[in-house]
Amino acid sequence: MTDAPPRCSLRVLLVDDESDLYLACAEVLRCAGHEVHTARDREQAVQVMTSVTIDVVLTEIRLAKREALSLLRMVRRRWPATIVVLVHGNLRKPIDGDDIALRIERLAVQVSIQRQLCKARLDLARLKASEQIVGRSDVMCRMMDRLNAIAARDASVLLLGEIGTGKDLVARTLHDRSPRRGKPFVAVNCAAFPDRLLETELFGDERSALAGAGARRSGRFAAANGGTLLLEEVGDMSTALQGKLLRVLETRAIEPRGTNVSIGVDVRVISTTNRDPAQMVAAGLFRADLYHRLSFLSLDLPPLREREGDLPLLAQYFLNRFHRRGSAPIRLSPAAWRALSAFGFPGNVRQLGHAIEHAIIMARDAEIEPRHLPAEITAKPGAIAIAPTSPTLHVAKPEVETHQAGSAILFRNEGRATSF
Image (cartoon, rainbow, N blue to C red; front, side, top):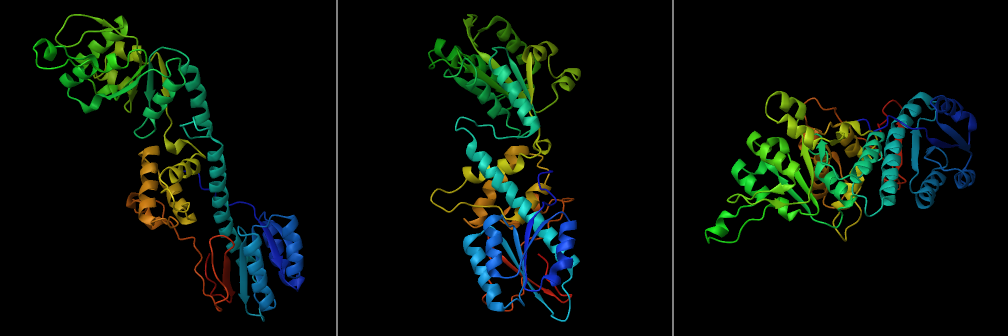
């Protein structure tokens, strides 16, 4: 996946009563593309933060300790999304601007992730209640344009896509946006039935009624009359049954098993397959005439790995969907988000949904960490190793606390600095 940005530009506020001390640090941060502001004390810091949205406040704990802690508490209270970095340095050594810049770069990745997930929450909130397909990537926008054009027609449609790309959801959306909306929408999985049973499921069976053994089976075509019939995995149907299906599509009439009487049906057929139908035709597994009939209009559903920018939107959608009513909103930690972003999701959107649901159950209403995700995501052979991004702090005083928002990060400028 490519949805985790490497970094972003930050607005950094340097607070120190000796401006020359941070001069080198400020220059290094500016060269790295960050916007740098300075303040001599708490009061000036408040003035800056009132007029500019600051991502990171950087100050050395040698700045009157009480004032530094007061600044920390004030920022956490008024600007909880701002990260406060307290540098605990050896006063005989100048602050290592390059070292701080490297750490700010690491924070930039975390802030970028939070911005992306926040944008996803806002984008998701703007979706209309009637919109079921979640996606804003270019490839999904093109697919939706084609879907809207196809929905207005009444011809057969073939949906192509890998497992888990949402073919059933797209089929339902085609029906809901067609002139047949409000009429029956019936689905049958062709791979779930043996050939003889599938014929009965599709076309019905009169034999039981004629023999007095019970009510007749009307079949899915009859049930969908006036509406839409979805044939999932139509490629798994035998070639013999494919011939009978082709006849129904051409004559718009069915013959239930056990009778020669034709019954007219008005059904739009939408078919799906996760296999390449052209290859199946070449291998003699799929009738060419049926393929051309079903694919008069076709729609390719992109795999999740090609939907750049959609991963955070989908992740937030599933967080909302599987959120336990009455509990606090659940969020992904930056480390969990990196794990999701690094994974290829061969099972596509369906696999992502299962992963989020699994994580919510394992996290027990707490923030989702990598350990809550399915093992296939965090321990898959060849997967990108995910380093924890939560700060590991060596805190000298109990007054310094850490939080997800408005966190305080303390590191020593003595060659033993902790990473964050």
